[in-house]
Length: 313
Length: 294
Image (cartoon, rainbow over all chains, first blue to last red; front, side, top):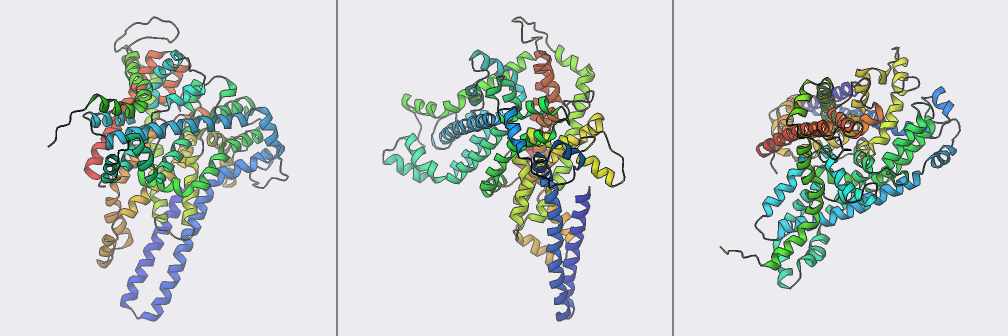
């Protein structure tokens, strides 16, 4: 509510600013120019103030989580609004790591997400290459079928996929998770768009030189779209690292859990809804921070990749 | 025109390229889709090997079942309650951040950052924000002179809390799309309107809004699809409660399938989720063809 009102205020301010500029054309130049400089300075200031406030609201849960993870449990309840803990309780992290194998969970998530992402990139690239560069009759049909899966909610496939994994003996295994996520509609969609932009003469030239199709894909097409591959990699990795519902159904042994499932079990077991918040916050921090770090490092890539290409899931 | 005669070798080559994707797609998307539809016509309970074909019973049952109707309503309430603020706030941020200025990259990154993080983890943090005794929300309410609200003990409060988390996560993503849409509007149009003496507000309502309407439409639909499929935040924050007041269709599906092992009704429920998603997607593609220019 509040922020909307503030946005309205900024809008009217910009409005007032342009009015002044218009007046400047008609009226005498010198005094009006000073006026213009003033509003020109004020508008960014208001914008910064509003954005600063909005930004603070957006990161506040993270800040609160960090500060909570460093407080003692008593302090959490007595001084909830203090962002700076009285004394840093680093041992919360030690206790949390001892309470549940979070290192193992994070490793599991990284491993599963990495393997899934590599598989997705390989098979999407091959598929996209086939439908863009190879000539065969059913290629449009294939593309339509794959894209049709885009509208399938995961839930529709959960029960039979679960049974399939059970029959393959892959329930409660990382291999099962990786295999069941190995087909990515988004990967095909995204790489197809990228491959369509590659000049056909390049591929023709390679064919005339006698290169095989796999070689062309590997040595000519892929190196040309490194930025796109990086974007696809990041997005697929993050999505898989964060996924929860399906992994929580497939995995039952504790030592195979991914971080999202692990942290939830810790929350239910240790948290008891308000009993041990400082450790729960430490656990959340352990889950969130690796991703925030990836984001800080690859921020430019992720932001532009998503804005340009329309990504979800 | 040259007629193409595919040789065995070429067919094999094509297969080599498409099978690595098609096999998992068949095994975990297409075939499961088919069998889900089939299971939705049975009374299978997952444990026993036998089941009966019951036709449309599961669907008929749902139409009279209070839990289902409640979940259906909840799903739409949740979707609307998430989509409207997300799109409005996303547009507001995009208007402020469309042009590069000093610090704009940081603001974009900060507003976007919730999207990156695991929903499960951030939902736990937000559970703490809405905690009744020492939660941030109630502390702020008390500071402002209002009494505390037992967020998770009332249906509306719990639903509101989940909506806040969802909007918070989705705003940055929506903003990015709006920024790229706004930057695609030709500057000449704005210049022309400036020469015509339009006010900033007229320019916004008569020029900007209509020109980005395809993006708005796309964002509404896509955010709706995501909202219909929201699960993580519900399971952490409310588990569908109190008394089913935050149980959405997907949560009902989860309970039917993996808590009660009623696979028939669960599959039927998932087919209904599919129908909703499918209709939304179809509207999106149809409108996309008419409105979106690449």
